[in-house]
Amino acid sequence: MIKLRKYAAIDIGSNAMRLLITNIVEEDGKEPQFNKSSLVRVPIRLGQDAFTVGEISPENIERMCDAMKAFNLLMKVHKVERYMAFATSAMREAYNAKEVVMLIKKKADIKIEIIDGKKEAAIIASTDLHHLLKTDETYLFVDVGGGSTEFTLFSNGKMVNSRSFKAGTVRLLNEMVCDVVWDEIEKWIKTNTEDYEEITLIGSGGNINKLFKMSGKLQEKPLSYIYVNSQYAYLNSLTYEQRISQLGLNPDRADVIVPATRIYLNAMKWSGARQIYVPKIGLSDGIVKAMFYGKI
View 1 (cartoon, rainbow, N blue to C red):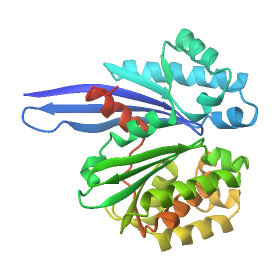
View 2: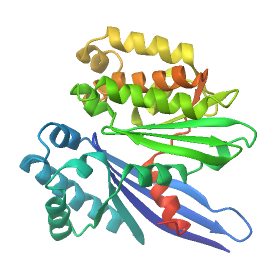
View 3: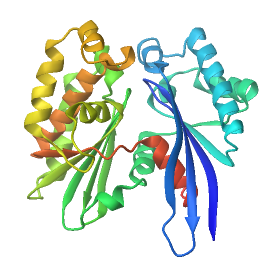
View 4: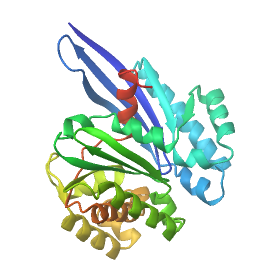
């Protein structure tokens, strides 16, 4: 007996907003299958507002409302039975976030929950990570967003520690991450990884996915520190316009990919990791799975 369900997740990030619609196939005696049905990404850079002026601008509020109305219609057309919408770093810091949430509920009939960094990291970690984690190895999971970066250490298949730092790509672009934050990240990584002989990185986020795609590697193969380092130098040598014209990057990806690569590179350097796996998972995947398994 096969049962098909449709769940959706809305991820309101600092660099973009995403709607993921997932088909969940349940079959007796088998593990449920999660198949992506549709993914829509809208480049509304809320972090630009929240981190520089402290509020979401009227123009972006209108764009958010329009996007949410569209998301609602798409969920209706796909016959989604359940959804959850989470907002992260930018909305956490915008002082008009509550009004924005209320307005979207009124205009688009979508209920948004603003979550903290710890919950964000836990939801992402509840994705398919257990399939990746070899029980006898140690991993540092790094999720780079527009407003914050979540670090989670896994050893022997279990979560050891987790921390969220206000060092995201949009903040870095606006030169809003001071040396103290970098020092804190370095200290946290070194302190938490020093007792382990070998660390492997797992990266998540749109930028590392793009970097991986550009490498042309097979999905289960890792990227080396040397490769990431050379790509960082290469991306840095190009202008914003060249990254769009020569590499075919989206305008809202062409600027943030450089600071994002710097974060992954530093995480590898400070943990001593020589490789980074990129399993293509993110907050929206985590939301769907956490909903299905009753964790949220």
